[in-house]
Length: 289
Image (cartoon, rainbow, N blue to C red):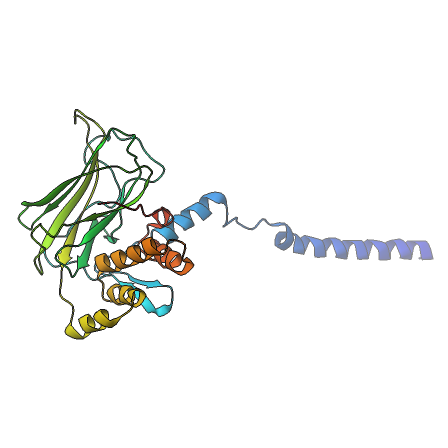
């Protein structure tokens, strides 16, 4: 065999070997990896992270800034009939007359979602005359009627107040006045915050509702609260599952120091921990009832 034939044969052997090697690598190099981060999947994952399912009977333990020093511990749902409720605005039947805003009417209250998709909206207080906070998306330019109602365990009306809309959307405070009979210990009261956008009331209103229960703290905890500075007091309430005083304390601190970055972060983390991230950046309106 002449030298030309040998060279050609060597060339073919090398070429075949390279082709075989490339062929064996092609499935690894060229096979497309499943796109686990497409827009649809990312959005679905984001919703999962923002709204984690809460197994029945397993209340969340919510961590805030400061590691284990500040945590909101959501207590178990009270024994008896589940409180139910609604944390976002909407109607029971049909379509509400209110226009759909970017952020709907929202009660700033913890809620749990059971395995059967039932929502329970409730929180604890230690005082006779607590305060509630709501994000209201409508302004006084809207001809809507707004009302807050509190009922006792027998569904008797304890307090009813017409609420005036503010100049701009934001978080408002509704307090139970000292002239009204206070909440009894270990009793569950139901509250409603309703916006009726139909003057004739032919269409269902937008509303939120939930249950509040007054409880007693231990004497050592009460003594600690009495001597604590406000931010520490907020942390003690949060750690003991007392939502209303934790939120009120922090809201009052923010109203006095609206530009304080630490208080802004605490407020944002607290509301984000109960899956109300969208409301966390909304302003707390001064001079609300």
